[in-house]
Length: 334
Image (cartoon, rainbow, N blue to C red; front, side):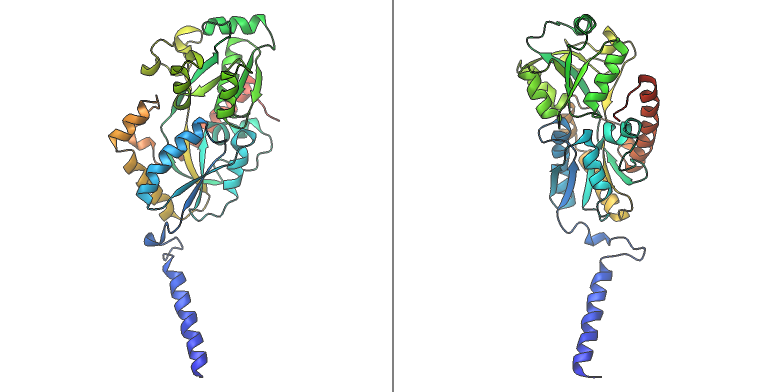
């Protein structure tokens, strides 16, 4: 055998060994090989909205634990389903994940006859965020002074109550539809590519109001840019003590919050899922951090509900729940 042939064989063997070093015997990434480059979290809404804000808030701290940057990729469209489909088709290598929420990962299968992904079958659940209540806000010049007044306005002025949302199928749309159905009023839904631009038009008076999550709504309320009429939590929020709940005013028993979770394409190596979950659970043990989130009226969950397994069970339950809600309320986006 020539020296050149021997050298080629040695080089091929070295390359093969280097490649195998990145994988375990079961075909998953080796523990010390992941992550070796920046990671992308796809947020299916425009920058500046509550989903984007919460994702960036958590990603910054998880990235420190992971030892690699987490890049936020805003991919808005169709109430979040565009971004979700993008991640479902992505390579299952642990470097592209989805920031999912109740709209496109819970309600979408009930709202769309043809959906480009299955929230349960096409994803691995990684971990769950804390939940976020919503606030019903109206433009400052709107004549309604409280939630009863807004409902009365809607009944007396059919098709003249314009409510914006982050996109059809988003939590702001779904909650508005549920409330309108429960109140027996007809609302004109005005969809945007994210809660940020939807809120801008409430402030500017182009639309009458919207349901927005507390982490982005509270600053606008405190600055007097909009008026809060009601919250969707079962009890009043400490940050909005004078704002009643829907439960205590016009809709006994009503309670709703936006839930979130991180999802990876189905088949993502277990080591990547485990590293993310471990990093996140460390972040959620930081009391200073969780206190900061609670100050935005974000609702902390028991530690066992943050895991990937718990998120997977919750996703399945939510898909079933929204199928029943859509059938009862005649909700459809097709």
